[in-house]
Image 1 (cartoon, rainbow, N blue to C red):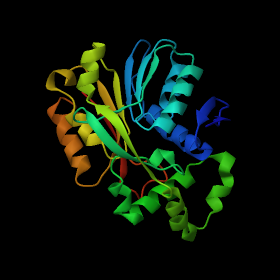
Image 2: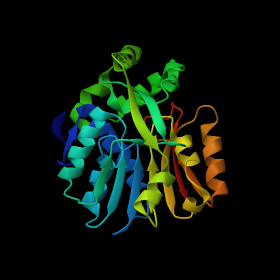
Image 3: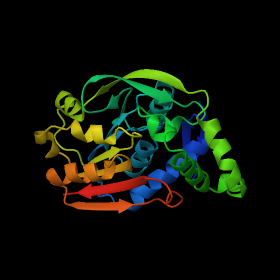
Image 4: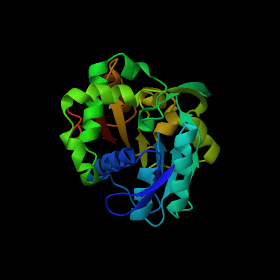
Length: 265
């Protein structure tokens, strides 16, 4: 773990500096879309990674509750440190994931690129072109500190992709459903549910009971559109009152199957 400065000087703990900068750019895209967040709101962050979203919200609002979930132990250590660094006592972290049922789930952890860690490694392994496009997109959004990354010839992308997937580790971690958590914590309203969990996003939606959908006001989620994931997500959301759905492709990721979905009632 290291401590770095983001582009605006914000200090943050991370495992990989380049990833932290890409994550910050990713979160900026979420915030710029015009999410309706105010003081005293409750945010659920599924797949929080190192907690950039929680850090940025804690900077923006003086009184906001953030519940962040990250199942990979090494990544969670940075998340925990960043929650402490934010000085927001209501930025709470949990070393577990969310899914469609309570269970122990196997994850693949990529030490060379922690943000790619997933319970569905086949997403990256079965489509090399998709993975290479995602790697290329990440390089294009690294920021001015890594200006030289824009000069990397495209012919090197497959080799970089192979390196990022090297030395992978299998890790087992607890997952629960969002409804389990809502019941336990007696949460009355969720202003925003953010989901970015590398292939498990549809199961997170399946883990929400009917009576708990009524508590959720808005959703932002990254969808890897394989196996009709986007179609399923839109169907689930529409059936549960989310009639306004907007799809956005992030700059640099146009060639990938990654789509950001914004939904409100």
